[in-house]
Length: 401
Image (cartoon, rainbow, N blue to C red):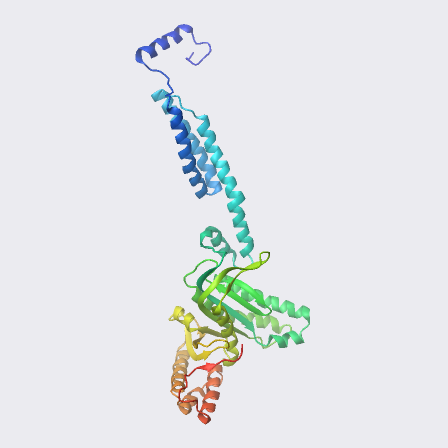
């Protein structure tokens, strides 16, 4: 069948079609101001589709673009066949493809480059899961430095100097790497960030680079996990005839400056401030009390009721004038025997603070295997013979680092 679009269409029918169009006034037209509407449409579509493609991932925009082109074609045909209006399909279609190409090129060369930089910067400091969260929420990441309330954790091997002096360098390096790898895994599994290693000391940060609500609890759970895995590390060290491995952990929550620190050429994402120094001091305080995990009162207020802790003492660390109340983290849950012990210990601590040295010493002497109890027995003996002044503030000054 011959149609009006065929080259062999007869002239009579062409003339008849023209006459019919004249009679019914069915003309193809292109309004004089239609060019302005097309320009306006291209401008607005460019803004809207540019925003859309910026929000979408590259794969999603690949599927969205053909649907938008189909919409263009359908709209053009509707205008042509129903309204008799000649609209330009070529320029808007090319414009859509141009937007798709330029936005995705921008995302690849700028945004995805930034993502690669972030991944490269943090993949050695946080777990892969945290890196993925950072990439999903880059707006939460501040690299320039800001003041935030965070939790810092310090851990250190007791008597590491003795180990280092007696072991060959190759063996010492292997054992230390095994220990640090195990402890770093604990940090990563609880959403923490490895800040740095200083010899056998490990420093971890919680609440950054991504903001988390329960960073104090995460740090304490990390510390407990470290103590559990310490038995596994001890077993490995025993194979090399290295025994008596023990660690101390200090945790503090407070205001810190976090961000990129260093020179223009080399810098690290880290924290600075008095709160960081206090965390380090608390780690060293374990040596005085014979404990493993000491936290500040600021940490305790965040985890109270969630973990088993005991109030230990009010101290003043080296380099600080303000006294702080310290606690020991003992576990996630407490047995009845442990509850009875804590009740007795706190009763002895209360008598100690009331300067009732003999009564307090009698309670502490019941627990000779407990480090803090031995410390208070010694203090009570000293104070019983040489009582502190009448204005005694019940604060013990720690002179060790």
